[in-house]
Length: 165
Image (cartoon, rainbow, N blue to C red; front, side, top):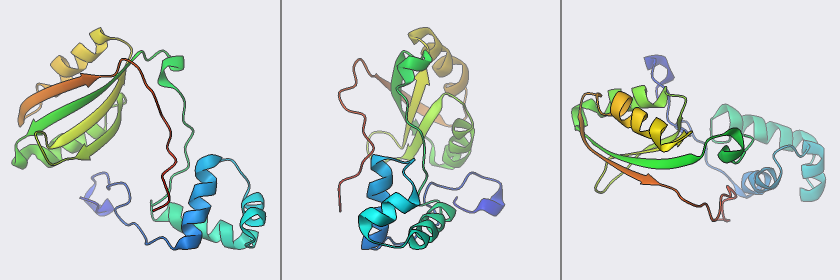
């Protein structure tokens, strides 16, 4: 996994670079406003615009940085957000990950340690569509041992600005 020549989807940040202090400052500025111009960021950080542009290009090309629009899924008609914890046989995990990552209702997939070895976050229109996803797509997958579903009833914070580390 992480090898783009294998035909499989590479892991997020699989070719990640090490961020220095300036990279972290640039990322922080983009987390606040991803549409902010490189010129404005450069002025604020007292760094040439060309430096900002080349740093962002390097971070994006390495897949260490993705600039996205975030929208409340409920305004799009998706009234159900759920986390699905899957226990999958080790020999079936890679194929399961590849399959699940291809589904449009899946927003996030990660490998975990603990009572499950995969965490899948999905967005669905209703409990009925969530049931259909579980019964029609997840349960039939080879290697699924256990499925646990956590549905969100209310979001208290949805912010993707990481603290300074």
